[in-house]
Image 1 (spheres, rainbow, N blue to C red):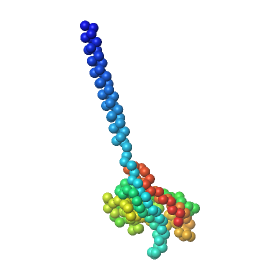
Image 2: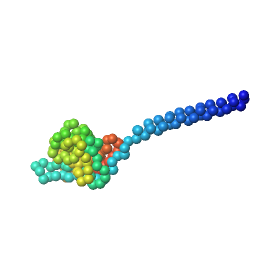
Image 3: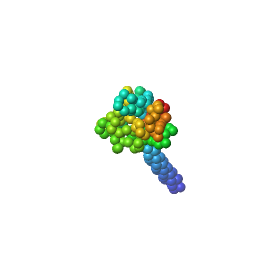
Image 4: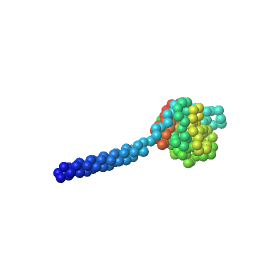
Amino acid sequence: MKVANRGVSSVIGVILMVAVVVILAAIVSVAAFGFVSDINEPAPNVADNGGFVIDSSGFFDAQLVQITHIAGDDVSVEEIEIVIRASGPGDSLPKETRLVALPASGSSLNDKNIRGDLVAQGSGNDQVIDGDPGVTWSLGDTIQFEIKLTEADFRDPPKNADAEADELEVVIVHTPSGAIISQNTFTP
């Protein structure tokens, strides 16, 4: 009889060990899958070429920021925000503006898209960041917008001493990942 009791005890012991292993495996897998679902997709890789142009060909001077996509991944304009910072010796500087809720509906940036004073709205100089939803910033496309002369004057000599500026930083952020995909500093 002692032999029979020993056999039953070892079977029950094996069953309990298997149950403990299954429960531990379930706990570990739930924890692992929970962490994996929190991982974001990587930010797009973009190579760009930036420029800052003071266009005096029209009736008024226009200060245009131009950032051209020269290589890398296409980026949905709906997934970017643009941060613009101007600094210099002018009394009203430094200043920062954010371009959000892109692309701008209609033909140019408006109050819905501009958070700050540096960027001109309704100028007609906006490219890529205005228009219909679904637009992408792709190879050869140029993001362009205008800096207000009254807020940051980069002309030489400046005609608005309070807004005399000497450096403009433009940062493009990929909002889903929070990563900076473009950063340019201009010293016209």
